[in-house]
Image (tube, rainbow, N blue to C red; front, side, top):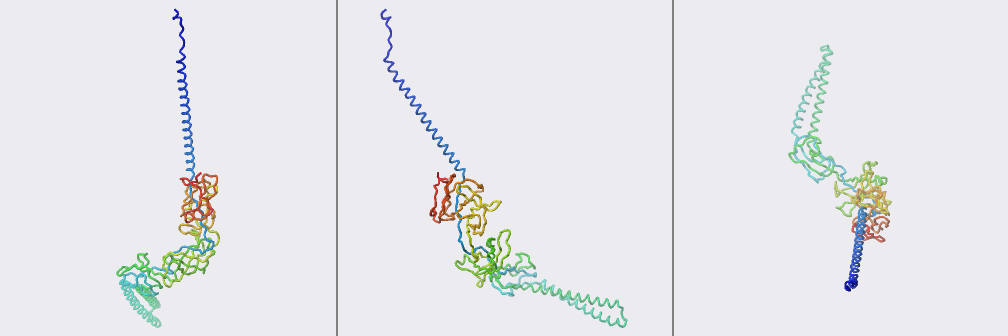
Length: 443
């Protein structure tokens, strides 16, 4: 009974062993949760940074990047230089005025001939027979005229004795007058055929050089101007020689007959061919806005050849600020010629221009630009007024000015690009912005 009433006492030793184990499990769970939170936070931060970087890159790529340069200043005073093509002073194709076969030709291309010198002979058998027939018809008409004259004279004597009637006298006189007209007609026909036969000999109408020969012995020749296919020779007078130039309207007032001029040709480096302005059109061409001007030069030794390219220097001093821009900086719009100018805030402006001379790869600008302006090379058609752009340094071959400062850094999305000289480095005082891989300013 005493054992039955014995109470069961709790085992505190086992309880004390389980408590440290639960604490360690709880601490492990807490640390695991903290690690998950840290990892999750880091991951979220990285993704947010990536999203922000992507958004920044997208925003930057949405802004176009352009290359900019300065216009090139020209010298303050220089001769007016214009391109031209040399032309013979007198030139003419030679055609046949009679039909026949080429019997002989006397001169080939490159031969200098004098006025009146024979060039070719044409055999004209048909014309010869027509001339023989016309002469026979003339003899017949003259015989009839003579008979009519005798009859009319006899009737005039007979009417005095009332041997014939007045009507018969009038008929005889009228017949005589008709026979005289027939003789005159036959004589004119003979002279026409004689002139036509004389055209079987082709003569030089003026002194010059034969530049083309299109015939050979035996060729059939048709009379008249039948185009290039019927052209026998082409004759050109090359002393003096002339050059036509198109003077821009801005310089038209300075060009007058007698103005000094000289030519330069690439095949004669360093040699000048002196001449003068002979005449001008005294009117501006509405299509080109230029003044057509003729410059004549002596050409005694024949160095200047018709059709050759030459640079004509008019001895007119051109003053004022003039600039050059490359042709790939131009925009052709319906409202006229434009260039894209970038301002200090990196905004675009479509600037109208007044163009002077065309140098081939560059154009002379008379109005619309300043030397300090920044213009866009190879502008896209999508560029309009007020568009924000990034700028980058143009290649050295496209830079137009040396020692120019880059556009001031503004608050826009892009920074200015400095220009380079011939060596591809920035000029004195130039600011070179840092650029990223896309060519824009590195922020």
